Image (cartoon, rainbow, N blue to C red; front, side):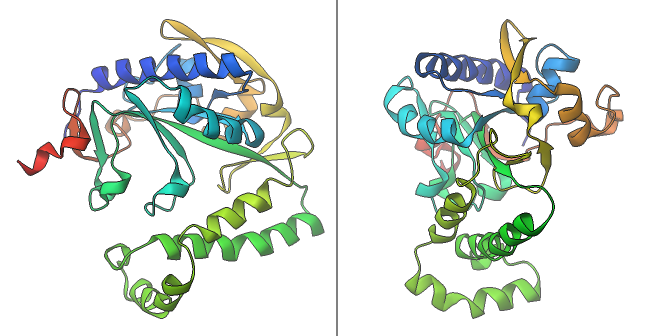
Length: 276
């Protein structure tokens, strides 16, 4: 389904401003993450074809934001907490506009995961140097990560014969284990090390690692009609993510990154208008 990228970006900018005000009131640290940081550096605003906003936070600020946001966001905005919905298997908070509809293809079967136009919030955790400590962490992390996906997937998510077999074999787990037990344990594992105490930083259970010096401090850059904090080690951070980040991708790759099943700027996903 086609989306109105300009209208989406205008609404996302409004959401970003509300989140920035909330963070300022409570002294929460955050920065433009991923493509939003690249947009600030290369375009002084949105990447023209980008369809979302991403921000990062140190885990301790992420946890506080998670508690504060449901109480203090404007009425038309909502916080979707991944621990409170069974699908999908990601570990990202979403601040979204409940007056709109922005439902990605892969989330269409799961009404509890539906949202309006949104902003993503990623937690950053500390990560040890290569060696015995990192090896021990990853030995504990990998089975939890696999189990997190298993517990949050359905038969419909199992595409290959191997995935279907794994689903069948793990059905008993769903009878005795809460769906979010693995992600809660994984969070506990990562809370043990802050980006301020560790040499490396890890984004929200992902596998991309950054030297923590990149994100311990921020610099302020223009973004549309506001300014945003970005990782102080912007060049190093963006090169790890994108390589030669100032070179535009080929024209056939300049497209929104989230295929959408249902989209509307003036009808709420809560009304399930696509069923009319």
